[in-house]
Length: 438
Image (tube, rainbow, N blue to C red; front, side):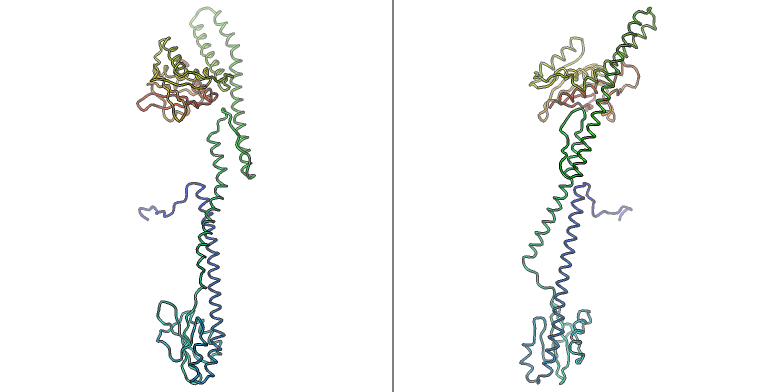
């Protein structure tokens, strides 16, 4: 730890996929390791029990046989009485060091118990690479006898066992990956559907197949999307109904104002009525834009289409130019696309005094841009600028701030023709409003 900050040796995975995979893999590996450890311990205890059982029975019998044999005949039976883990040596054996380890004590205790404590035993360890013990005792006739013991470890492991272990570990990894995939894939599909959610643009419903929990989540998501679309449709219908109903009283008020005597108050009233009427018309246009007015798609020549829009503005003295050569044709709804571009151009003319139109092709899509050299939009308000009735100009004056529906109408119309709209600031100053047609 330095400066009070602990050094984290392990970093917890940031993704749910990695976390679940890590937990499953570690859990299965630990469980498998414990099983392997238990098996190894059982084999060790079995080998130990076999060895101690042999020492307890066979060694006691062998000592009794050697003790009863004449001293000159014992040499003939030494090799015959030996076993794989021990052998008998007539004499003092090798020089060793006293051994008081628990394992040696257990071996000596077993032998002493087997021979009935008739022969005092002394155990020594013989230095070397492997564990080797010598148990010294004296027979009834005073002859020394040494038992040379090489304790066996765990039973030998088969050569093919490591390959089985590796195969099992691979199987654990595959099972953990499959479990994670089955768990995370529906979540990823749901996240992708949520990112692509656009109630104004109908699309395929989320599949409601699969496990019950996944199907329930898909049904809930589809129902939520339908409710959102219904609420948006209801909001647009209310706006259209109110805007439509307001036209009749506005018309009556306009007629009464025209019949009134000329006065400054009359001029102000007529101006206010014109502003309200324009706002009502924009509301109706916004409501209609969500349905696309039932226009059918047709193939248009981009060059002629863009030039006709620019010439219409030039004929009225507006500074609208086309950047570069425009080529190719597209299938779209021309009236809806014209309305989108005229909204962009009107905004550019209002805030910058001029506008430029450019066309690019990106990733198989046609992108039509309207560029200006105006003040642009603050970065933190770019997204809000696409919302209905949002006005960057803080005053209440409709002449300078507008109704705040231009970009919202463009966005609605772009959805009806299978496109999308976005605005962003130019690096060297100004704003770019573009519509992408797929």
